[in-house]
Image (tube, rainbow, N blue to C red; front, top):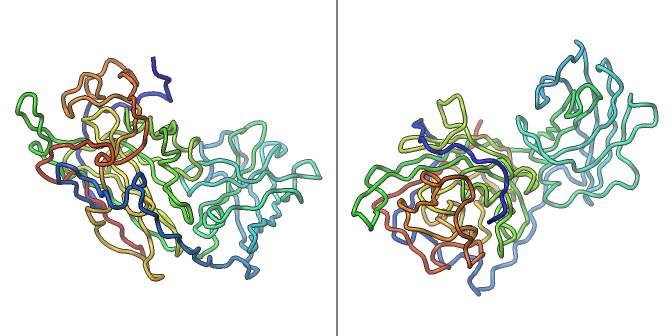
Length: 392
């Protein structure tokens, strides 16, 4: 019996909706061999892109309130608020002070977390108080931020969170917006048709639903964090690639954010032909984007970026990218967690399996492209279109 990671995301019914992101996958291989990290070709070493604000003494003021908090706090008095000032130097050292007032009770914890507005994420730095919770500061022995976490600060991906006994997940929150970032709208659109996937065993064809997934904005990492470690899938990737369940990702990969509700829908679900997922991100020069979404008629296949570092550059020569992502920069990969059956017909694939995570384990546990594993799929046309649009 294979180990389980999280609950199963319903995927029996594909939901139709409108789009704004684009990428096509249409060949029998649907991969980019030249950039696959399993190849022995030495990859160029990227030079870090200088980050805005860092080392310049930039200080950011932050307002905290209950309206920003997730999940919605209960019993918060009117006027519960907080204010903070924070800065990050060229070495990633954080200086911050935070004051709170009118809470439901004394603040018992305060942290700096990583996560975009509207999403939750892991703690990066715990704050300390010397006056019973009215004011907080970064401890003298707090760790410095990594280059990627400094990027998260610059792109508005960090936030303050203050906890009380009445609201232990958090009572007030404040997003740290350094004002350095460009906003982008990202759209993942299902452009398959009922004739896209060939099922050889019975000569039929079918559409290719896509599942809820996860994305990450990062920088200066040799490979996409969503795919690491490459010798065996992490819990988040296994959940998406096998069952279309992205729930484990935020606790598995720092900075990972779930997308799960189709455009025009009221609840999470997969997307069929004409359906789309959309999300908004913030980024600064040097940032990259990767995402994963399940190729549903499979045991553990997923779409992801396939350029040199398995991520999409969000800036080129300092300018924001705009438009449809090249088909060669996105491909189908295998998570290496479940033995492959015929695409669109296997009894242990998510539309037909008796329960989540029930197929035989894959003897080849590598996370890699289909072509790197000597695999292929017969498609009559593109499945996924991804579009990235800078916002004013």
